[in-house]
Amino acid sequence: MSKIIDNEVIQSTTAIVTIENVYILIGVMVMFLVVRTLQDKQHPKKLTTALFWFLFGSSFLFGDLSIALFGAPITYLIVGISIIVIALLAGCNLVSMGSYSVLTDEQQTKSSKLLGNKLFIPALMIPVVTVIFTVLLNGVAINNVYLLDQRHLTLASLTIACLLSLLVGWKITGGSPVEAVSESRRLVDSIGWAAILPQMLAMLGGVFIVAQTGDSIKELVTLFIAPDNRFMLVVLYCVGMAFFTMIMGNAFAAFPVMTAGIAMPFLIEGHGASPAPLVALGMYSGYCGTLMTPMAANFNIIPAALLDLKDKYHVIKVQIPTAVTLLAVNIILMYSVVFND
Amino acid sequence: MFDLNYWPLIGIPVVVLGFALRFNPLLVVTFAGLVTGWAVNFDFITLLQTFGEKFMNSRQLASFVLILPVIALLERYGLQQRARDWISQIKTATSARILTFYFIVRECSAALGLLSLGGQAQTVRPLLAPMALGAATNKYGELPKPVKDMISAHAAAVDNIAMFFGEDIFIAFGAVLLMDAFLKENGIEGIEPLHIGLWAIPTAISALIIHLFRLARLESKIAKAIVKYNAVEPSI
Image 1 (cartoon, rainbow over the protein chains, first blue to last red):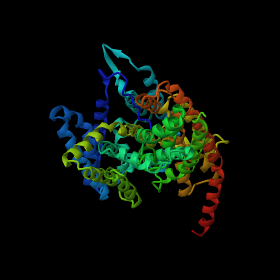
Image 2: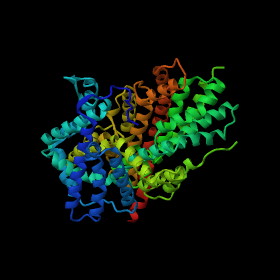
Image 3: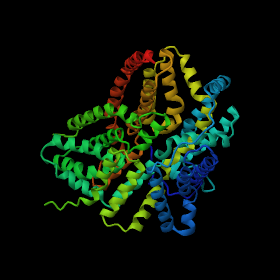
Image 4: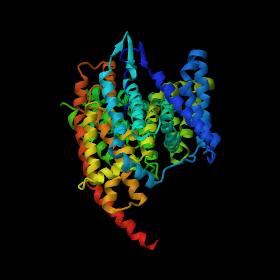
């Protein structure tokens, strides 16, 4: 849930590392992988896999340029059509792993013995440099040009950290950044469609907002409410938060709907519940839902791919006992602390 | 009394059914979007534009791909082996202890707002999972795939749970600001982000206790799984 909402922060003037530049960098990287995929002679689904990533990469590489040149409506329409094609390619199972030149276990062990603990340096650099840059370059500007995009400070810092650590990795291993990006095709392909799922879900959330799905859910939930039963109201709010988060994949999307639908009218106004613990525990109940849903793809499905798990739902299955217990704890906690009388 | 409009809800059963029938999630989600748009009489072109706009505006979600080249490079030169060898020098290290230690560090650092110190791509895959696997390999020898998967899945879960329930204590975190803004918008005054952050602490501690309790039992689960596997093995 690390999408930081920084809306209030200074509307961007200009910056050197802007979010648009980061997108272009991602676009270049994905396009490079498309070329490598096309060069992969043993790839079983070469053309369709390349098309899949090309369409994805295009929205990063050409998206902002196209908005500037042709306007937003046309660009959004083209991206919208691309999304349908992306979904069909993935749905018809036309996107797959290719072939990769992997070193044998012995070769890797030999290299790891040779390089020793120095191998950890670039890996540890990513988080450490990200944190340092986020803290140190917050608000730092030269001639009114910010060094980092102030609205996306973490992402801009992460990008710089990745680039620096690539250079240090080059120095330590002798493997150039080009080699590094080529190597990453193995990881990107193993993640596959899951890499795009978070954005697809954000898109669905957007459609739900326009369709006012939240209002309908609110009305639906109120059908089940017995306004006098405090305990059931607390249960309904917490379980509702968890359940709606599982549907949307994100507690932030569930929060306004359930809080405006149940917590505000029935618990705060109806029973004088204390707002601060109520909303905090409500949000946490949503997080319990995040742990149990494939819709939170970047936390639950992408790791399963990254760790090469046989069962894509394995991470979720491990998390369910903790999530359910914690949800019960939240309900009891909420019931015992929010009412003052 | 029931003037409830059910049509905007149609996407929800589509998503649930689609996942249950194991269709590709991208297809399920796109289809749910199309059906929802159709149900509320959206113009098709406008719907496609909404798709495109929301997709473009959420591109920051794909930023994890930037981490992959350096991880892939280091893995080619033996990072995972190194992580395993390093942990094998620490004789008292077990999978459960490593995960427990990581959980505590991750939750505390998240509570201080240092969210990017960990993550599935940057720490779990290259470091945490290999170390947890290495400690178990040390103890039991080569691990069967189901046991490997169990330990790796626990490594991923530890990162998620520790981060989720630590981050809300940090008052400048998005969720806290979102809650604060919501209350102010709805005319509830006198609540500071600090109050909300404080009320995150009981759940954060509960998460710590519950999950560490489960991790404490992980070692015996691994041992049992190994015994189970070895009982099948000799026949092969």
